[in-house]
Length: 112
Image 1 (cartoon, rainbow, N blue to C red):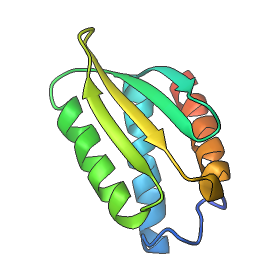
Image 2: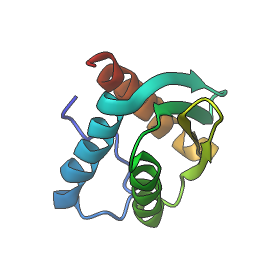
Image 3: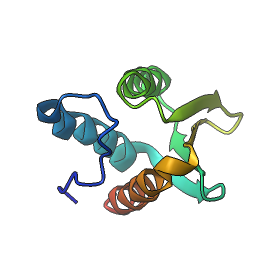
Image 4: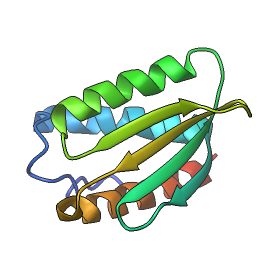
């Protein structure tokens, strides 16, 4: 899944930095993803195994991603069952981006 053609032109992250950012997300999902739930066409819920530094890592990535891809809305919650829950939503114009992210996340998580 090295093709980044799904990244929309509205993303302001410099092209040269995109593979590095994707690799950060991929590593997080490969290490920590416990479940992925589609919350309708415009929403995605990811549950990540908590652990030392995981919440900070997620919040850092979310902050940086929101800075270059303002069409994403991220909500990070710590649940009572040792999970960091990440809800991601987009507007209708970016539904295909969420589709690609969901597919990539599922594929990365399955590699664990």
